[in-house]
Length: 248
Image (cartoon, rainbow, N blue to C red; front, side):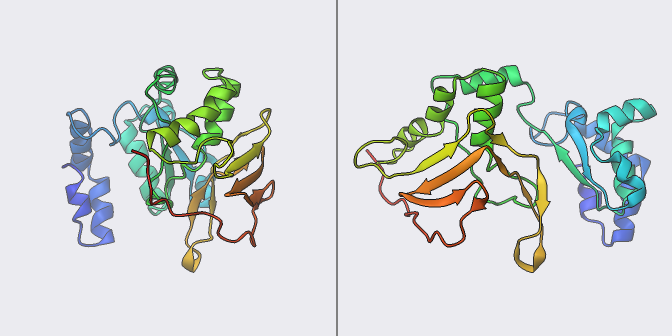
C-alpha cells in the first residue's frame, strides 16, 4: 500500500517529510491506477473533492474550491495540490469528497428500482466526518421535488412502509389503526437537507458534522412529539422502543 510509509512514520516531522517526498507521491499516483478497494480516492474523484475548512486565514480563499479545478488552473497534478495544501495548513484542512454515486442518472435508476430499499445508518460511527441523517429529507427535496425522479408519495413510501416491510418491522411504516404513531410534519415546497455545518456538542467539546433539517415542522415518536420547527424538544422524554420482534 502506497500510504504505508506515511502511516508508519515515527514522528510528525517525518510524516511531513514523507508527504512532501516526490517518490511517495509518484507511488500514490501509480497505485491510484491499479485495481483496488472502491472507496479510495481515484482520478474520478478530484472534481468531487472540495476544500471545506482551512485553519490559516491566508488560505481562507480556498474554502469551497475543488481540487480538480485548482489542479487544472495551476497546471499541476491533483496529488501535489492536495498534499501541498494540507502541509501548508499544518495538516488541519478539512476536505469533503463524494466517493460514490456521483452519476445522478444511475442513482435515479437505483432509487426507482422495484427492489430498492432506501435506508441508511452507520450508528454514528463516522460522525466527525459524515452526516447521513438527512438522506430522507434529501430524497423528498432533491430527488422528488427538484428532479422529479419520484413523486413525493413514492419518496415517502420508500422511507416508510417499503423499509418496514423489507426489515419485517411490525406496526411501523404506515398510518393505520393499531400501528405505532411515528409521524413527521413537513412542508413539501421547502423540505430538504440543510447545508453541512460543524458543531461542537460532543463530550470535551469535540466536533461533529451536522446537516440540519429544512422545512421540517414536527416529529412524533410513538405519538409523542420529539421535535418541532426549532429542533429537538428537550423535555420530550424517551418515547422510542427497542425493536425486539420481527415478522416472519
